[in-house]
Amino acid sequence: MNGIKIRGTGRGVPEHIVTNDDLARIVDTSDEWITARTGIRHRHHLQAGETITDLTVAAARGALEKAGVAPEDIGACIVATLTPETLVPSAACQVQRALGLPHDTICFDLNAACTGFLFALHTMECLLNASPRKFGLVIGAENLSRVTNWADRGTCILFGDGAGAAVVECREGWSSISAVLGCHGTGGMLRIPGPETGVPCHVYMEGTKVFKFAVEAVPWCIDQVLHRAGLTVDDVDFFVFHQANARIIDLAVRKYRIPQEKYYKNIGEYGNTSAASVPLVLSELEESGRVGPGSRVLTVAFGGGLTWGGAVVEFA
Ligand code: COA
Image (tube, rainbow, N blue to C red; front, side, top):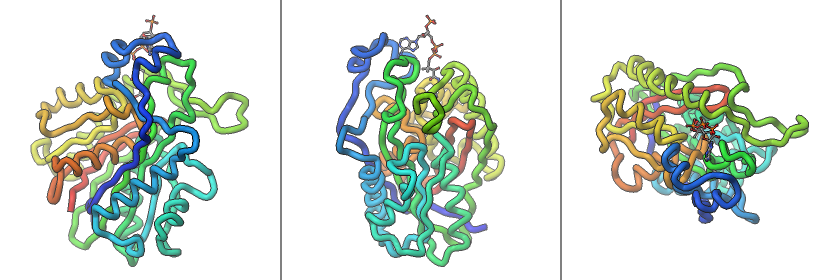
């Protein structure tokens, strides 16, 4: 199978910022507790009149511009999300309409919770191998403030809204992203019920159990991906972690002795944006020049499902 590389990234973030002090006015919490336990200082939330579709389209447009790729060259568009604005049309079809992607562009949404962007990258690699057009749009977009229980201090402090996108290209001779993906079907420690289930459509989470799962899943994914790709930690230029809790990232960084210039945390700014978290990091890194042509990035994520995954993706 031919591999994919990233051509360009983009992002869409709501302007409205919710600080820890704002949350301390509605639940029994404090800036000190949230910062110490999670690393989150604030998060961005959509306001009335704004939609996640707007952010998704902005991220996709930014990625196309950065990549210098025209909409008519896109063979497939996948939006990883668990909070699309509308179930039908899908978020990907909304992007298709807004950007004028061709009618034979394969557009669909994918839900693998916080691991969604990695599931989408792998799916895109498979799709582009069979597509006559070799560019694809992979997007992660979430409106998590919509499924937040504002009375639950254990979860309402964690989540933010946003969208990140990458234009990828598939070429003969490029090596695969070596994606390692997995699922363990259980809603016991993390779930969001669907409509008409009789319970509010909110995040229900046993945080400490999810934390323990994540602390094991992250190194497992890193080891598996390195093994599959035939690489060592030193061969990786940059590590991009799902931004769920700064302490989870810190533990992984310590375990693998990853130097400070090889990883990045923006959880302080955005909180946990689920499927948008990895592409938001990629976009900020590319914009600041910390990754660019030739950079080899190892990315790892985990989330509800339960799901987990990792991949090695290069910038073209
Ligand atoms: N402010 C103040 N106190 C809080 C609080 C808040 N926002 N949330 C919980 N607490 C309290 C608890 O009630 C508990 O009090 P008690 O000891 O009197 O019972 C205490 O703090 C410890 O709670 P606990 O849930 O054990 O804290 P924690 O250290 O595990 O941190 C999370 C909670 C949610 C920050 C942490 O478990 C976490 O990040 N988990 C992973 C979440 C995640 O990644 N989810 C998404 C997956 S993609």
